[in-house]
Image (cartoon, rainbow over all chains, first blue to last red; front, side, top):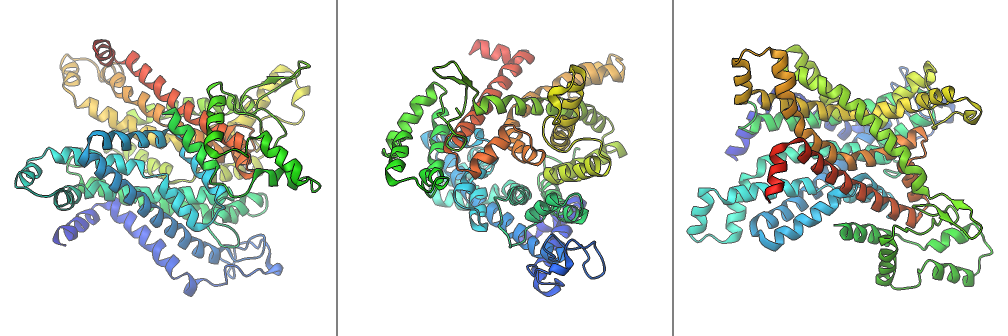
Length: 281
Length: 326
């Protein structure tokens, strides 16, 4: 616990990660409060209010079906956060498991797992995701699973590399000589010591997953109407690009700011937690 | 490696619910169960999965991905000549050069901008130039490229009407003379080429900057400075060459991303390249096309990585000697 609080303190003393943290908290709070603060029902269709300019009644205007864009943006934020967190949760879990197996047992286990990683890395991942999603019928759950299942390779490599280098360190050898079981070695020595890079890559991974989800929804293969997501509001934006700039501007800005927040936090954490970077540069 | 890829792309297709014959039959309500059976036989869909995979692998070895389900009987990969000598061009054969051209042009623009920016950021490290380039990088990493495309489409295409916003050529393309043809293609390509290069810029700039910073700290640079060489000569002839070496690998690694990214860009700008072809094929459940593009895309990635390795060995004498020894 103590180690964790000092990590957090250190991370938040870095201006980059502090800025990122504040951005993410704002997005988080706003989208969690969506049912309370959204001025309209996000799916309420008002045929008398189609494609209205932003005004006092509709801060971000209305879309082609007369739905309030601000309300849809707030609810869309929930989807982005959910997809980002769950997808990264899945990919990080797979990555830790496979990376730990490869890095700890080495030999043919390592060769086998790394060969799978190589194969997965050489298929253009966006193609893979698109193909799987289209065949599984798009839905939020499928998107989260598929993004998770196609983005674990980086974490695997990272964990494996950490394990390989930690395995050579004195304290691990000492523990091994004292007769520690494999499970004890993995869970009390290797894993806690490789946590920092895992956290950094998970935070950056959320940024990637949010971008991916919005891209898929934009193509119509992600979150399906009438459920709002930033990506599918942008699809409407493309449809009405000649008449309604606000439909394109706001959701894109929201994606940009959210992803920027995660990237800032991730890079800031990397700077703050990694003794090798930062001090001499 | 290739076998792994082919296995994955094959089994994804068989995750699909439904039966392709439903699609073809849907266009023709009179299709009987018998004719459906005939279709299944034609595509070998009546055989067990393993047999289907074997047949597919056998054809793949000769780069024959079969014919498209959706666009009637168009060969997926390469042209075929029928008995009368009529040539039918393959779908990938038509789409691939367009995508390659756009990505190569984009890569050239990216490098042309990223290398100078990276050098500036490294030389003025922690100065205002570096800080603004870093800020720009963060935004470049975070901006959704399709949103940027929409904004530029709106700003340059709709508001100012400077550039056409979709397709590769104007409608009257065939009636133009050579000069206007070139001009027409150029104005159509402008947006789709520039946008991916803006988003790719961030990563490569950061990479050049870090490479330069590393190299500039090394002893031989200090030696060069101590000899009294001008700063310009130190940076551009001594440091730059070594800083750019790893860039070769990065470019090789970025190929899958470029190919994947072409889906969104080509869909937005209605460009008939690999990305658009893939997107349409996925929507229509056109198995052979999807499998063909997945395989070709992965093969391109492998070829790209191989080329990067070769280029690296060519550019770096240390690696070359290591290879020769081994």
